[in-house]
Length: 265
Image (cartoon, rainbow, N blue to C red; front, side, top):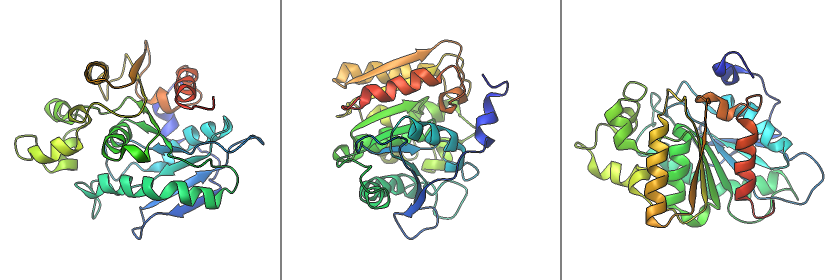
């Protein structure tokens, strides 16, 4: 297990096999990775990175995660999107970029990785703020998402605003608080969008200091009460970054959770 949990954020990863654009903006792109082995075509896995939606964090820090998922036999796309602190980032473009990417990536990935991407909607793997975006996308465009693996997701934007997670990250994303922009919170907050129509697994560490595990407990409880096919895997002794680190003790649980979302597992 790495001594510094944040080491994964800067750990080198193999270069992607291809990069595709889903729009005209320089950040409307995705890195693609071929699945290891000669197996049959499998559904695309789209990784949505975290970083509290801020410009200083991009898809590259999920390189080790994406490479490990490809090593398990999945075709993988690392989705980039516009973020707060850069022109065009924040409401609504951060969210609509993810929807636009999901609309195009199955076609783009199938063309770039011939014979390796099965037809159909992808499974989303989102971490932290990327977990929020994955849950938002699943609720907003249910036909475009086959399932969600949410890793320590910011699953309640109103509560994250109240807790001032990452010093104003939610206000930077949505322009202010729930009292100022109730319509934005109603449209973007996963807690307000239950039930989901796809299966969802939420994985969260009990020692997470960036996103409290209570947020996932409450999101899953609300989803189950509303009829969602959602379950929580709570990992004792795990912090925030171990969930995206293939060298961590959390990795077997993350891999198993993803496997449970695939109909071909």
